[in-house]
Image 1 (cartoon, chains in turn blue, brown):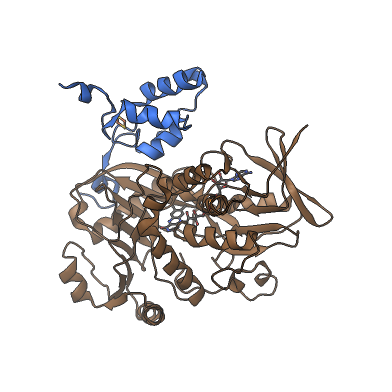
Image 2 (cartoon, rainbow over the protein chains, first blue to last red):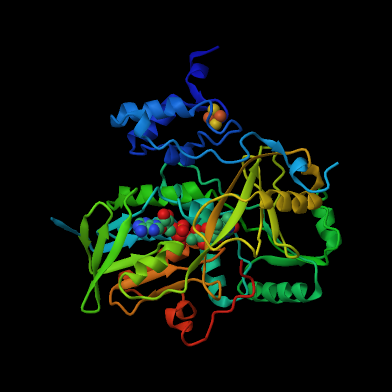
Length: 91
Length: 382
Ligand SMILES: Cc1cc2nc3c(=O)[nH]c(=O)nc-3n(C[C@H](O)[C@H](O)[C@H](O)COP(=O)(O)OP(=O)(O)OC[C@H]3O[C@@H](n4cnc5c(N)ncnc54)[C@H](O)[C@@H]3O)c2cc1C
Ligand code: FES
């Protein structure tokens, strides 16, 4: 595996740490904003793979402890589900 | 307490507040925007972001045409590094009843007279061009291939980002608790953290939250929230599926540029709330309706659902007008079609706030139309 790959923080959306740090430095210091700018946390895992690392980065930059940061919302369905199974009259 | 000042205060950082702030800052005005959460956290970021030139009144069409002139180069203009994901895969209105088809035809005739490239298409033409659509029972569609989609979140955030670059102050997570007026004139605002800001002009662009804010200076607005739901699927191969709006049960769907599909469906029984709670009933209804029309998606997975408030008025059209409080302008009440009016809404508000003549006649958007019972009837409202 190359170094570059190792820098990918959000694997679902393939977003690297440098990209995330760039926007934090530009003043977007909460997860809700970063999610909307970079799609981090919008992948099928809904941020299970990347949220904690990103919150730690925000914490480093702002000096606020992770526990005080807004974690963003996890939206239903919690795991991806086949549309067919949600529709009525599915076989 | 020190009082801070600006030339213009904008309350609410949805697409209309953000685009107006951008336009004003670009024109050199000292402007400050207050947003209670992050930019786009209201209706704007939650919208389906369908962009269309299918309206049935000249006023809306003039503005819609302007929007579609701006969108293709907006990412370049705002130059923020955020992608606006603008596509022009078209927007289709599908008729299942004769009276609906006749209205679509009228709308399209008006659009054509304004050089908008809309067409009517028969069921067999639809089948031939989009073989994956299964439109049993349709009698015709209206289609405009220049219409499309944009990412509503990066759109709103980009307007704010570019506004800052031009010197605007954009304060997020900073709710305004009340407006201030004196002797019938607007004076400023008070924020939740107790700051007082004064300006001779205030724009209220807080979507459905505009009503309680206007009431703090005695202005009565007939704008109320109505919850609407959307879902997004996993990405599949990109085949440029246009926005398809089914006029039988209000279901709609489209492909986004990253391959995901968005499904929505209007439901008259949804609560009148700004709470962004989720509806399980929505999932069953929308998937049943959409999969029937595009069976190829039956294996697709739903990744997320969310909801957001429409900012409805009694005639489902916006209010863009000076209020009885001198210096207080409102731009709200866009109902289900306001995201796409960000460019034109921002332009006319900037023009009004700078004392210029708006590029379209805003008479139909006036606030007094409700009291006068002279509503703004738009046949193609959502
Ligand atoms: C599910 C759904 C689908 C939609 N689909 C489409 C579509 O396909 N095409 C389309 O064009 N439109 C669509 N819309 C409609 C569109 O989203 C709205 O009409 C539009 O976003 C309104 O923009 P706005 O800037 O006026 O208001 P909003 O985006 O609601 O912005 C108001 C802002 O004010 C802020 N605010 C509230 N109170 C305060 C306060 N006290 N102090 C400071 N700030 C405050 C809010 O947080 C919010 O960010 C849809 C809406 C929904 C919900
Ligand atoms: S790793 Fe970021 S959304 Fe899945």
